[in-house]
Length: 294
Image (tube, rainbow, N blue to C red; front, side, top):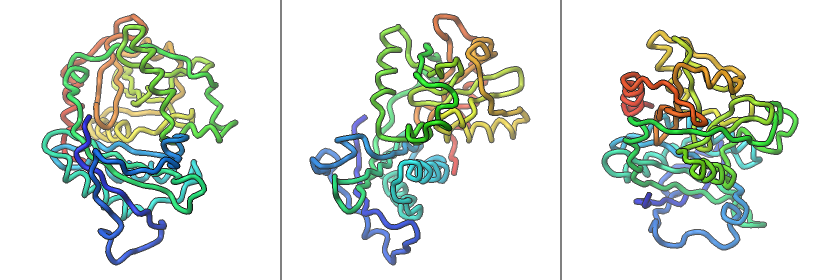
């Protein structure tokens, strides 16, 4: 995913109202060096991010992403982002993402070690071609994440509900899934409850009810899942949040991994066992997700 655009952001205080937002942005060559060697995002993964899908220059679900960015900042003791500033940065980057599907990424780092201010930037890139996973589906394995469902309440310093830059475990889980002959993974709590995928949320179907794991289990509250639940409710379906045992996922009528860029990928196989797929219904979900959404 080659970067097409990069924008450095001079972070404003959350309540600051500058006369000229443009003066807080600096466009930089996306292929050139832009961070110092003391940057804590690269040294320690100490920061947060959001990935926003873009369709023909229109950024999707921007407000939901900015709300989650602010939530992650609060969990990580980072300065609250100035939402107007970040909204403007998204608009600038989205305009540079090119035709078709793209992705805008927002990054807020703690900054330089012992430095006075955070570091922030936005990038734009063309999205990969996800036609195959959307239409043919994905094979998934379950992996133990190593903590119980109540870990977030007992150990908030684990930052389990924040979208941090520390994705080494997530990437290791994807590599393990590939080693097992699958495309993706779903994390389980150590006491056997379904959580989320390394880079996606889970939605399963039971009849006319759509279920996703309750976010109090230390998972990231997915913006795409939230949008799909609104869409499904408008279509007359029931949507619920539950603590989901693994056996409930195995018995589901259908299941999807959903995310801002890949969108809705139906699960065709779970731990080697086939799952039913409704291709027409999945196509309707992706048609909705590709339509302009604010």
